[in-house]
Picture (cartoon, rainbow, N blue to C red):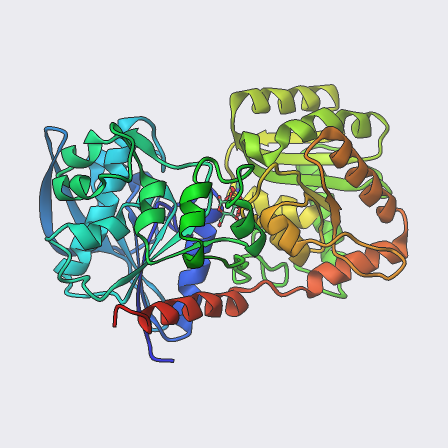
Length: 486
Ligand code: ADP
Ligand code: GLC
């Protein structure tokens, strides 16, 4: 295959800015595509305080000034250093929009920030005279870029032969704003092109991308089917069904450069298949760190999650107390998000101070220590486009307990002690009974040394690497380039 020029545009990318799995996917996929010889450039905002301190940044091109909602906004570009075989990361430097602390904000400002990102990514290509063959955008934040390369005459020539790909990581977030924000961001031509895409007054960034991208993917084959239904389509199922021939599901990969206990420096001891002493050390240290007390025959259940409704955290909060009460589980939870969920988890921690550790907030290293030191990892999601923590857990000999949805269904199969097949516990219904059953079942397996060793070995042997998954994107890119446009 010929080397391709691929532009990835996203709100997050590991190791520069991360709120969840989107960042891991941009980082891991881009690294693998570049390692396979492609010219990959990644554009993300320069969230000023968030970039790692050791990054050496270089300015690129001139400053630009744009009028957005009556204010003059200045932006420019910086790039980090990259060796051959690595993706080239560019950052949109715009302190007015991206210097405010977090990755996400809210309200209309959010539309303006991400419209700027879309536009700036194209401006960058223009400035460095680089026309990508593939523009790959992700989620609603960058959803207007496929429209921009067609309808904004400032960019349409440079991108005349570019094919666009939208990956939907989370259909629950669509970017719905008053339509005037597009025109107010200096994108009047684009606003005109949205006739028929939008309600009279609203623009839905994700829906616009679904209508205009040359191809669409979501992050697991099962979820690609789910989002075409009323239950999971979040109102976009008709748009997706209309263009279903352009929609595929490509399972995410795991970035084993960062998530592998054989070389993970964030955990207290290294371990791997067949040599699990280090895992026992990780468990011991995790319990000590959180001042928990769990005898060796009680499994430690971990959770690392954004605390939002679709993750099913409320189900866990309902069911966990009975297991903690009977000393059938200990648990360690790390999460950031919804204040009601935080309060519910805090209450459990207060009730069972020696059995339940809860850390509210975002902590990358603690996430590694929990995934390494736990015996079980719960992901009881109502919907889960892919989910990465269950894949990471497998690599660390931690047994996932998941609901059968999206990528969880595509990666975890229910263990059968009779055949020794399977890598986790899978429940069907997103209700307390389902989770209770799965926790009971998996806590039972933990009591049988033979079953447990087999389960861990099955998980650790799985390969969900980007080395295997990135070629599926390459095949899609190539199909587009071989298609009508050329
Ligand atoms: P989502 O993208 O929906 O949040 P994923 O399972 O795809 O779910 O990815 C979650 C990623 O974010 C994982 O890398 C996980 O370790 C990380 N993560 C989630 N919450 C936290 C947190 N509070 N602290 C540190 N890492 C977190
Ligand atoms: C989203 C989804 C998650 C997926 C991640 C990366 O945040 O909620 O399931 O793994 O994106 O694609």
